[in-house]
Length: 166
Image 1 (cartoon, rainbow, N blue to C red):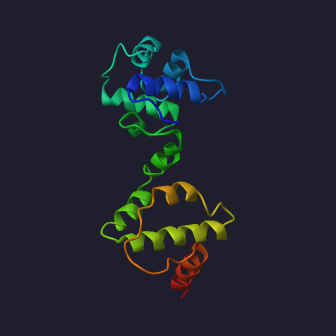
Image 2: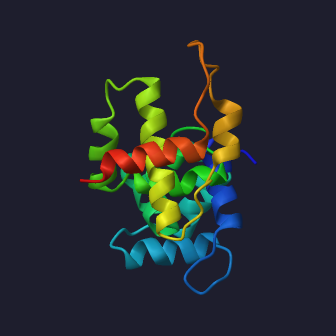
Image 3: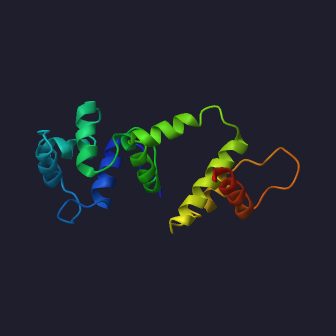
């Protein structure tokens, strides 16, 4: 399910699909109270105007305050993301994750495959779902131009594990 394109539609969608600290869906009043609790003074009328589209271009500080109160990264308002992207966008707020992604600069497709397989292996070792988003990744993966047999996930994970062992 795709979140709508406009800031107003995204805010409305988030308010309808996420819960406030009391466990109920957000209202403009509860969101205003939460932003105030977090040090940003915002009226429920201002939030309502953003959500219904009558205030289509709020300041970036306002967008950041709304995102913080809703518990989502502010980037969710900047592009069209689906609900499943929220955990990934939240991870990108972590400096360690950004450093890891930066280290991948310049790596080849095969290198990316190896990194992915290594992470899958680590997830399995930790008792987590090793095939997290595997089906989606397989649908979106470009066809390999190199001839030859592609390793199975098990073979690749084994190879990755062997390369990590001292």
